[in-house]
Length: 84
Image (cartoon, rainbow, N blue to C red; front, side):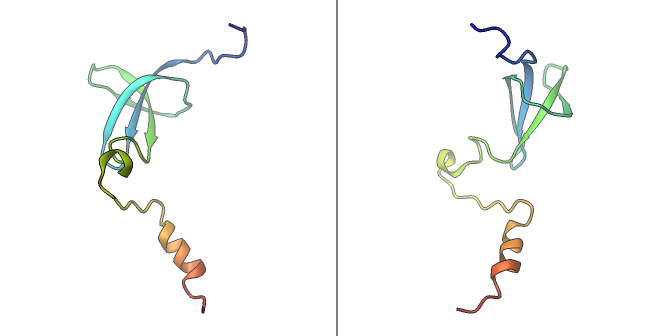
């Protein structure tokens, strides 16, 4: 492998789906400031996800509606009052 092109900060990181509190741990170099105590009692960096395979409609077969950060209200305030 070429030297100097691969990140050196690979470590175990906990990824947590914030819509249903599902979490998993894997090696990553994702930058994060949050930490969490995992099931083994050790503290790991925490990367928060909006959607994972446990909450995405394609994988679950169930359509879920998640309004993050008021996107619908923002859309309605911009375009809702227009006339046809």
